[in-house]
Amino acid sequence: HILSQRSFHKTFIKKLTEKGKKCVVIISDALRFEIGDELNKKIENIDKFNSNIKPLITSLPSYTQIGMASLLPSGELGIPVPSNANVTHNTNPTVGIINRAKILDKEISKDNPYVSKVSDFLNLKSMECRETIKDHNVIYLYHDRIDAVGDSKKTEGNVFEAVEDSIEELIKLVKKIGVAGAGNIFITADHGFIYQNREIEESDYLSARPEAEEIFHSDRRFILGKNFKNSQSFKKFTASELNIQGDFEVLFPKSINRLRKSGSGSRFVHGGISLQEIIVPVVKVTKSKMKDSNPVGVTILTGASK
Image 1 (cartoon, rainbow, N blue to C red):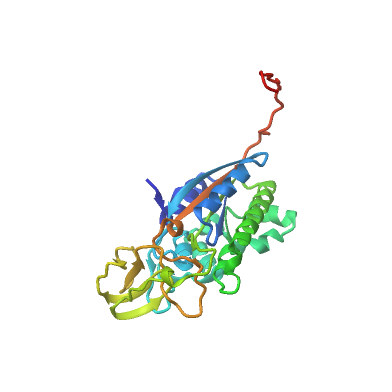
Image 2: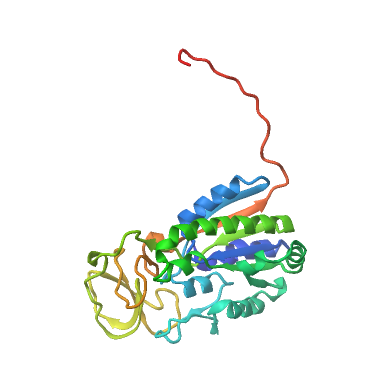
């Protein structure tokens, strides 16, 4: 049984804060499960840190806004105006860090939440970092390196470098938080992605065109509209099936084909229903007091062949 992204706060954060424990949530945009797995292994090897990983299934469509809103404390998600695909949480806007900070202040005011970009948090002096962790029980840090590189047509070919940089940056962040004294760190993501390193060919695009009474919003991996005609190439959901308030349907390509969208990159995409897009990691990091390495004795075995 894989947990849904919307149960993240209730499952991982609420249980700890109710016991008076501090939590730091790091949300790294487009941190696909395999990247989380690599990060988890690297953190495990750092002295005095324990780390484990669990999968989450993202909300659909698997794009940034809905993923970010799903990681907030539980509430009703809605897309009141499907043409702009902006997501609300209990009717409050969720676009951008400032809006999400307002929602956290409202929903979990007793935890005195603190919200920041990872880049700003890394610039804090160690004393400021310690004070911040002391003053706030829940800290949400937003990280956007993979998605920022992948979503731009000019830089989408640099996704592998962006992944390497992200892992390094997140390890640096974990060490900084650990030194400052926070006991529970959770690293997760809004969505994953699919990526093609070669140039995209004609066959990578879906030839079938969606037919509908009205199309509100088209993306490279999903379409919002009204009264779509059934098609072999697409999977259709209503807003209520996806647990989103709103009057629209969502159409997804069944395979990993892209939909055409002018002016946007097409090698790095997300929003659809492939496992690469919808399975994200939750890497839980805790500090251990013990040093995990011990000296061992060595015996040299000599066999018939040297």
